[in-house]
Length: 230
Image (cartoon, rainbow, N blue to C red; front, side, top):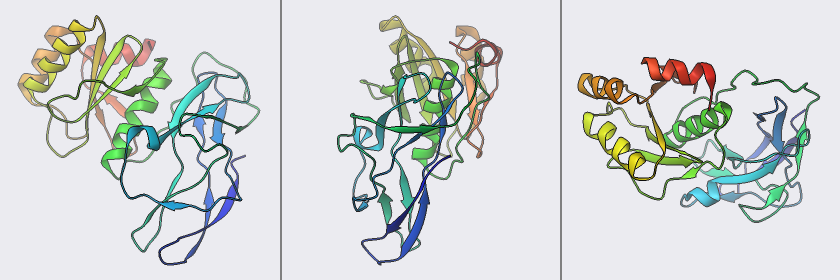
């Protein structure tokens, strides 16, 4: 069961009780980082991919995956980074898992989308659920949105209110081709008609992220990927 710890905001001194979220491992077991009760939370001044993600080991199967670093939003406006066991963002940290039997693929557990970061997190979690490994920020930044990379795959996440365009789809496809990788698109606002037509012709899976954090397939390649996984 996820643990709860007291958290005091360093800005307004307000007390909170924080419960660590759990995420589904590929084996089906829920995984949550082990929180450090002795360390004080810190305010998030700026963001970077390395600091926003931590490596956590599943206590059931031993698999190591990257998951979002625990954070808490205080009503005063400060975003608090909740400390976990281990100080290096890429370091292995302990986990708490429930007794869940292994299965081929457990049901996807979404995270609600309230910010652009949440949209990127939702897409990364979904890719991991599909079976892709080594998810990270892409080396080459796309013309718009956020680029993610996994073993054999490039993904683009458009976390704004603007629909993904034909240029977005074609640039992603060309970059993936140059790296001998597959590709997939995620968008909050959907796609322009010409972007959808081009994606269908190129066989690129397109997903729309709803506010629950669940990617919804919008073309046949996305339906097939959702059904079969990586």
